[in-house]
Length: 479
Image (cartoon, rainbow, N blue to C red; front, side, top):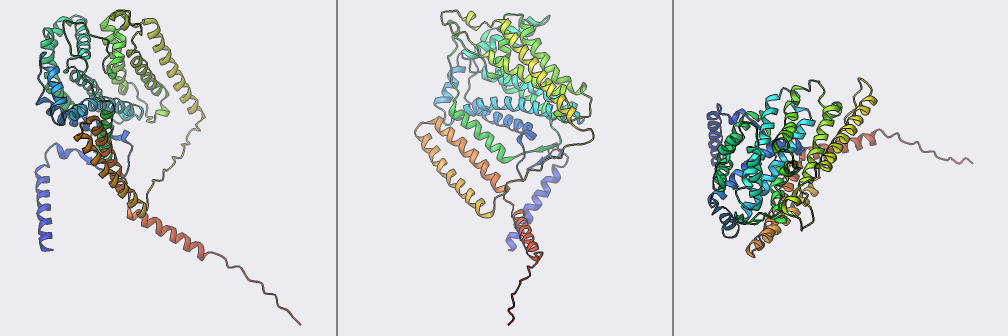
């Protein structure tokens, strides 16, 4: 017992020493919360995006050890990582699908903050830096998937160069400064942007963007990593076709978060207007919303105009993204003709969908607000959490742990047999089940269960004591 108390005192002294020395650092200026119950991941989607940024930094550092940034060695070095480096296939898939997940979570975080009205709580600086971070995140992902330098990367680089060249006044000078001369310069500059310049910019913006209170949920983060691994197992990232300057590239499209921009460019109009000005209007709309919406209403149901505007923007992104994947099915046509998008049906479909969604949402919310009695707020429904009793908690936990052990064995067997995609899928399932185990464990609260049991016993006892005894009627027989 003495040794135990001595060890505890040493640990507590070390903890106090560390905290006192960190007292003036930025780290202790942030308050980390580890929730003891399930919270909606939408509330801390920004923290999940930041965790994905850290995951990409770790996996990207591993890939940097073997990547050769040059027109001759880029494609071959990535192929070497895939086929020869132990766990290289898994690391590359995590990095690729993690970048897609980060862009998706950033967009999800933007719309959650928009519809929940978080920018109204004196958070204009956080909102503006968040919008800039979103754009920079897409640029970071864009520069990353171009480093493979296959046909898809060549298409993306060509689009980036053309957009820069067609910028008014400083276009050619800006293109020369950013892209350099020829494909050999492209790769070196994209590499510098991806691994050094843009991450530093993102780190500075995050320093200003982070609020004081951050929520880190271990089960949700474990499930997120699991989903990335499962996605990599089902849809492993491919090498594509190595770019050959002596042969024209085949038909391909950029990543999903750039196909909407690609659709605008393929309509044949001025590239700066379609590829720069029109998407810039969407970004500007979100950027200036906190300075336009001065109402004190927070809920999206009470802000019909801005809620309808947000839904219309989602519709526009969805329509243009779908059109960006369109390729004319006739193989006898040349490449330019197959990739050309007729502007009249494209812009008509976009405008009709946007206007229709805006009118429907705005009209619905206006009609709803007209039915609400002034001064009377609907009573919120309290959700009762699902809490398992002791027996079922242990039964579920033991079953999940057994399943976890079996999955570990199956993943090792799949990896040893060269079935890397299957091994990655099973590893993702391991992470997801671990998240479920952690959630079930934290949801089990003996105090709550004991209190509910005591309340039931007290209610049963009170019901028994308040029962009115029924008088018995005896029949007396008189002679």
